[in-house]
Image (cartoon, rainbow, N blue to C red; front, top):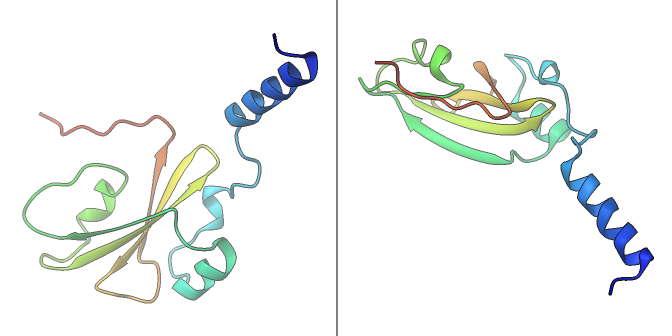
Length: 115
């Protein structure tokens, strides 16, 4: 049988795991035009990095609205950071040094193609 100290420790761990992280920045902390070096200095390395080549195909997700501004044949590098309420995506076209677009995916969002 678990002692009361162990039970209390398990309860505190469970609460901490379910609670939102208060050290996550607000989505508004990111802005178009900010340099990569500024982002890395302020927020560290992205939680996720991806790269997409623009073709005639559609794309789904937080990038949908930005995708129409990407020239055909260009590559978009995406840096993702957890923020309060979801994930922020930073878009760099063709190796640009500055953020050229930003997308936001609320926690729990599911993106599907429209019919």
